[in-house]
Image 1 (cartoon, rainbow, N blue to C red):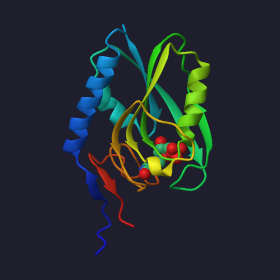
Image 2 (image 1 turned 60 degrees about the vertical axis):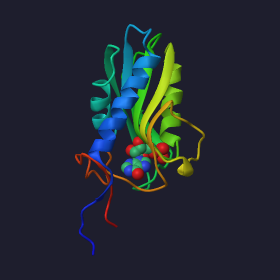
Image 3 (image 1 turned 120 degrees about the vertical axis):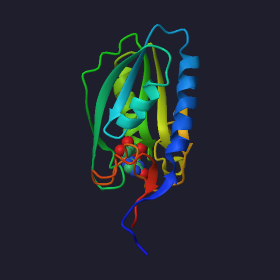
Image 4 (image 1 turned 90 degrees about the vertical axis):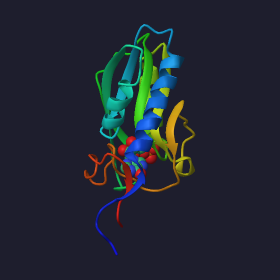
Length: 173
Ligand code: IMP
């Protein structure tokens, strides 16, 4: 019977453990850096980024970029509008995404960030749906690889709802 509530897919405990591992990996890879500029992709990556930066031992400079995609509700149209005031020249940068689906949003953001001439640029995503990919982009750090399912929670939404859930869930159809 439909309950109307999303059902849990990845628990809060699993997320906490994985985010800790990812923070450790990012810290190890940037141990020689005096600081790391962490660019959070709004809106979906805000909770993941908040937890991740607290697991990174390198001093972090936190920045934001807003990506808005227009078109169908549950899939990227490829028409991505970016808003930011980033200055990344010569900086060590970690881009933090909530999920890579078709790859259209990430590829558009990467083009934009590379133009700003960072010293290095690594990509971190909480979730990856490789089977949905239309453009071949890959993250350097991936939390969980999942099948081509629509998920919500821990920052991800469905029409603006469910971002506050502490776990990743599959919305009731
Ligand atoms: P892409 O451009 O298709 O890779 O989609 C990236 C963006 O689409 C993500 O940053 C999310 O905002 C959104 N998105 C893709 N898949 C999902 C999902 O399963 N749940 C919620 N948002 C999603």
